[in-house]
Amino acid sequence: MRGAVIACGRRIPRLPGVDESRITHVPHRPGKADIDALLASAAEHAAEAPAERTGADVIVAGTDADLAAVALRLLRTDRLAAVSLGYVPTESRSAVAALWRLPTRPERALQLAWHGEIDRVPLIRDDVGGVLVGSGVLTKVRGVGYCDDTVALRGMARRIHAEPDNSGGAGLVVHVTGGLLGRRRRTFTGRAFQLGCDPLAPVVDGTPHPREITRWCWYRHTEDLRLVRGVV
Image (cartoon, rainbow, N blue to C red; front, side):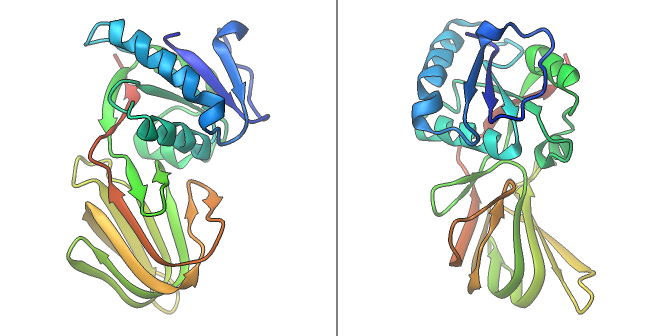
């Protein structure tokens, strides 16, 4: 089971060197019924593997939203510490790949996922039960926002962009863009960002939230995501 591939959605490129028997085809943004059994099996095999192993227990081929869906199932089944993830982006403009310097060509991404080192990276949650692994965006914001205890917004912003902290900091980086021409940007780092605002719909890892919200919070989870990203 180690290195099993979860192929999400229909737009999956050819995966060179992968036997079809190791690929599980699931819908875009897979849920409990689609992948929980596979993740449980991967956790069992991981428990028998050497502690200092390299390579991913499970490889996700799909979009950032697909990777987030798999990470969410690991969170909800309490398997974040047991199962490491590799990532083969199916879109060249992947925020996750850019953030963690992952290759986007399938053959290179697979090689890294199979043989790379496991790194612990921040997993960001929200207060409606979701997770953020690459990029969260709020646009045309009017309200009050705090990054930890610091006022990040009081009034209007053209755009607020949140992402995991890749510098080893507190966990979350928030960019607030305002000004008449939308060129003034301020950056905040912390463990959490809280916002009260006029109704808007967040876009998380490329997926619009299904309804408008007036309150929103992103915060670092107590456990990290175990992502294969280093070169052996």
